[in-house]
View 1: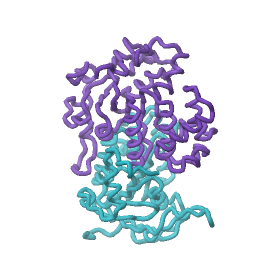
View 2 (view 1 turned 120 degrees about the horizontal axis):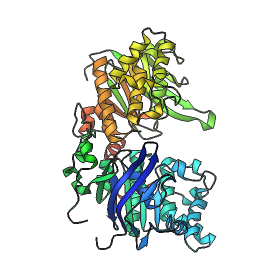
View 3 (view 1 turned 180 degrees about the vertical axis):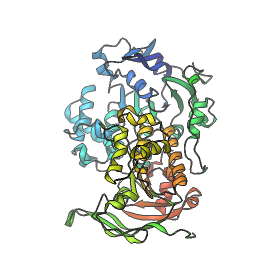
View 4 (view 1 turned 90 degrees about the vertical axis):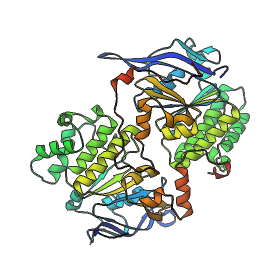
Length: 288
Length: 262
């Protein structure tokens, strides 16, 4: 990677609690280029918090510090709220887990997409509507004209997620953060949504951070994978080498999955070693 | 297939229609299957295929169905009696929604005992907590003090405390992480062999269903597309085009563009 799109160094997120500061993310460093980067880990490992911190969408109580938080030459650490509003949705957009909660129930689907477009680009209402319609078509929605005038409750889960993707991509962002974008979807719909995401990311040449707890999905979909445990990155590897993982935690996660082709009577349950909290991080040689 | 044990549960010609007239939605059409005592039967399908609707009819939560549901060769009335609920219990998908937020684990577990007038309540609570691998100290916790996996264990304990014969599992692990999923699947596996339980499980994850069940039915549009054994499923010996497509979809490789249609 010659020039990373996003570069994060020593990101820390802490929450004050009666028992002192609780660190949810403890010194995370990584680069994202124009590639598909997967972040995996169990709940509570800090993967979603990391994604949110990049957009400064962490809860008010959170104390976020980073040695470096650099996005395409902009220092996100120092950026004002006003500046962030221009970046959010415009240059970095985020696809949330559940379309049921992230679409405005009182606005027609088309107007929501057009709104995102008008907020970030200097376009008129008619042009924004045309762009939204084209975007709905790009996410493979049949009869985009009809869907344009529907309300979110009138569309299915898979369609809602595609509408979310359309809304996030209409502004042509450089970086897309997808936080469990397919967890609420069926296997068959999931494959469609992933293909669309893949197609659009490749076409627009954007970077993608794909946050998920599903190892197999990430292994097949992404280029590079970061494995998080207890707020730290414990392993970084190429997605195709996931099955040759070196960290015991990654190996344990892989073993805990039931597999169709290899039946076992008892699944391996990952045991947790306190030493992993501060143990070594297995990095790829090429990157820092 | 050898029929060694008599069927514990049998569903014959089940039809479920929601709504009337032009708006009628034929959610389940002519579904029949049997599960022998101690067996495990899995239902797979996409959302909207009617798999949970079948389970809700079997469990007695939906009383408006046509066709027969038989427990040990006795046709069950649509409105079930209390004895039925003692023998058949259901585990729900979301342990975050299925436990009362303001009741301690102890109260949650005592309630079924009071309803069914069973003796030695505290002793039973301790036994069942031990069976699902929780410490007795968990009795005095509220659901918000438990992790997702612990909550699902409590939900399973609430079913087991009545010593049922049949456990209906509606996506018991889909709200959980992969590592916790393995724990719960192991627990269900162990409980089944220890207590000779009969399972009917619904899931959209093929690998999870294949891990627990011997017979698997694939549903689409309210109908059984195919019923096959777990060995055939693992070997990919599905005969119907829909089942083959579903088996292929468990790999997440992006589909080719012509497959991507709404």
